[in-house]
Length: 61
Image 1 (cartoon, rainbow, N blue to C red):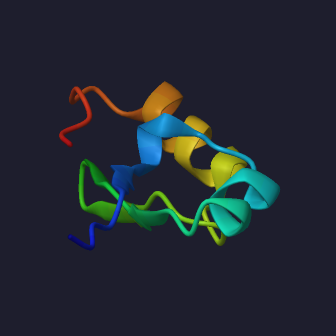
Image 2: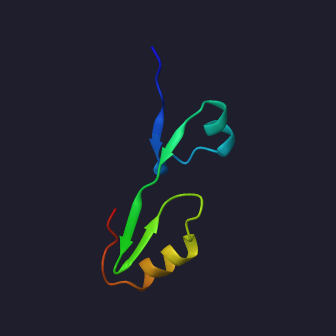
Image 3: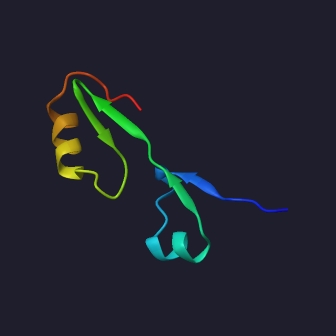
């Protein structure tokens, strides 16, 4: 029986572990006001944190 391990981006595994065990990551999306962020290797963390600090709305995942 074959199987595939898929984790969401909150799992925060290192690239080495993901490659060694052939683990795929499903990125979560985060909406803050009218801005949309994808939690993957290209996530603008500073932009996300700035948006959260400056928004009167709670972020939605």
